[in-house]
Amino acid sequence: MKVRDAWPGRLRFDSTRIAVVSDTHLKGDGWGSPPELLAALVGVELILHCGDLDVLGALDHLETLAPVLAVRGYPDPREPGDRLADETRVVEVDGVRIGMVHDTQAPGPAVRFTHTLEFPPGSVHELMERKFGQSVDVVCFGDTHEEYIGWYQGVLFVNPGSTIRPGMRHAAGELGTFALLDVKNGVVSAEIRKLYRDAV
Image 1: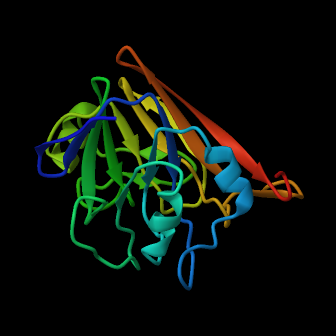
Image 2 (image 1 turned 120 degrees about the vertical axis):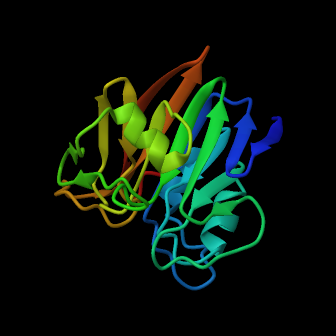
Image 3 (image 1 turned 90 degrees about the vertical axis):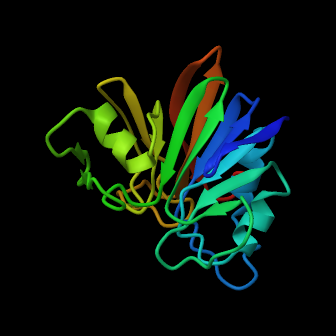
């Protein structure tokens, strides 16, 4: 896999299958990711974490499976280097620009999420260009613990939910959720995957 810094906050990958996780809220050394999640992520080429990891060890644990890029949530520590960005970042995969942010309300322009996205007036493309400093094709975000996939004016928005603390009502035995992105020939698709207890 080739990695190149195109400019600050933007990395370029030659990958196709991407896992998106958020709000893992791990404690201690961060090596407490559910085995159900780790089993489900085997074979992905890149993992994007949308923040609220709580401890850096959470990224170390995920990196045993694939390279990890993340953005900080509110309680998250900082670290030097490219792995953990402060507020936003853009990752390019096969010509698809993926913007990452923890909370769609900050940095501005603020986009509210209450079971669906609520945009301020204006073009979605222009709003996201202001948020990320460039145009994006996909926006991955977290914070709500509620999984979500939606298209707005040609931009794909993905919230993977939380791997261990889902915000929506889930059936008995459901642990949490994550998202998978497939990028092929510049086209992206997304799906939510549910995690079930003792599914390994």
